[in-house]
Image (cartoon, rainbow, N blue to C red; front, side, top):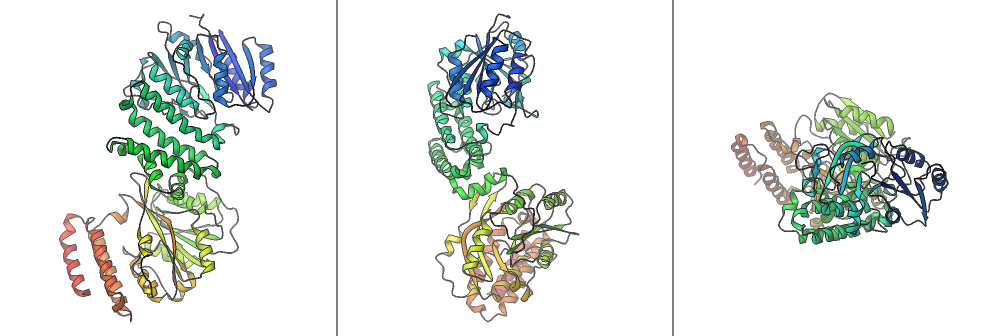
Length: 615
C-alpha cells in the first residue's frame, strides 16, 4: 500500500516563527510518498524565504504564492494542484506526530475510505474528541458515518485532523468557502454527510498550538460576519441531502454557541453590530423551528440571552464569564465608592462577582470582602485576587451571618458611597461609571437602580420590569420609595448619611436588610433613580434565599414586626400604610411557594395574625 500518494496542503501566512516546526514534522514522517503543497498567502515576514529553503532541500515541497486572500482561498489553491490520491491539511503554526501517514495507510489497506479522522491535542492537553462525541462506543479504525456522530460540530470541525479521498472531494464538488474564516466547519460538514465510509483513530497525531498571535482566531473583525455565510451553506447542504429533521437540533445548537464564541473573540468595536445581526438571525431560526424542543438543548441559555436581551446585558452576563481579569496594581487615592461583598461558601460563584468589580470601567473605588467563616475555597479565591488587585481588602471573621458581615464591611469602608453586592451576584461593568456621573450631577443620599434575574440552572438572565413600572409613578416624598425594592443591593448609599443615622443590618437572622431599608427611606432627605439594570441577581436552588426552615419563617415575621413598629411611629405612616399592606401581600405571595409542607400551617396562621394587626 506504500504506493498511495498523499498530498499535504499547508496554507502559510506570516508563520515564520512556527513554519520550520510544521514542515519538519511533515517531511520527517516515516511514510515518504508525500507531496507538500505550501501556499504562501501574501506573507510579509520571512515565511516565503523559509519555504524556498525547504523546497531546495526536498523535492516533495512545492511552493505557490498568491496575494493575501485568506486560509480558505489558500487551501482551494492547494487543492487545484493536488496530484495525490488523498489530501491532508496542516496549518503552518501547528505540527503532526510521527507515524500519522503510515498508520493511515495501514488502516485503509482493505477499505479506501472517503475520510480518515484522527485525534489531536490543543496545546498538548485537551483531545479534539473522545468517545462522548459518538452515539455509541467507537473502536479504533471502526467504519462510521455521520449518523454515528453525537457531537458533529464539537472537537471535530477542523479539517486538519482529517485525511480526505481526493476523488471523493472532486465528485461532490467540495471546496472551501472563500473570504470566510470559518471554512473548516462547512468543508467538514459537507464532506461528512456525503461520505460513505469514514474511519476513526483516537491517537492524537495533530498538535493544535494556540500560541500564534497572528492567528485569525485571535483577530476577528469584519471577517467574523462570514459566519452567517457558513450557516447558510450548512443549512443548504442539509436540505439538499434531505436531512433537515436529523440535523435540526445539532445545527441550531451549533449556531448559537458559535455566535457566542465569536462574540467573545471579536474586536470590541464590531461586537454590537455582530450581536444585532445574530439576534435577528436567531429570532427567525427559533420562529422557524417546530415546537419548543430546542429549549432542552445543551446551553440553550446562551441562545435565550442573545434574542431576549440587548447587547449590554449579553456582554455583562454570557461574555463576562469568559473575559480576563483587569487588575489594578495601585489603590486609588480618591475613593468614590466602597463595594462591600459578604462571602460565605460561594467558591463556585465568587470569581464572576469579583471579575465584575475588578473589570469596572470606573477605578476610584475599593472592594471590601468579608469572609464570614467560609469552609470551602472562598477564602483562597479572595486572597489570590487581593494579591493581584490593590483595591481588594479581605476581612476574615467567624461565621456570624450576612447582616454582621455587611456591618463589618461598612465599619471598614472609606468611600464616599456604599454599594452592597452579594458574592453569588455581580454588577454590570459600567455600573460605577454611570452612577458616578449621575451622582456628580445630582448628589443624593440614596440612589436606586434596577436588576436582572439570572437563572443559574439555565444560564440566562431576565430583566425585571420594576424600573419601567416606576416611570409611571409619582414620588412626592422620599418615603414613597420605601417598598420599591427592600434589598440592600440595587442601591447606592451616601456613607456619612448611613453613619450619621446609625443604620445597620439586623444580625443573627434572615431578612437582615428589611429594617435597614425602612430606616434608610424614613430618614433620607434625598433619593433618586438610575434607570439602568446594573445588578445581576443569581437564582440558584441551594441559595439560602430559596430555602425555608422554621427559623427562617420566624425571622421573616420578626423582620416584618420590626418594620411595622418602626414605621408606625413615623408621622407619615398613614400616607404609606396602603403601600405597606401591598408590600406585605406581595411578600407573602412570593414566599408562600417556598414554605415546606410541615411549616405551611404555622406560616398561614402567622400571616393572618400579622395582617389583622396591620389593618
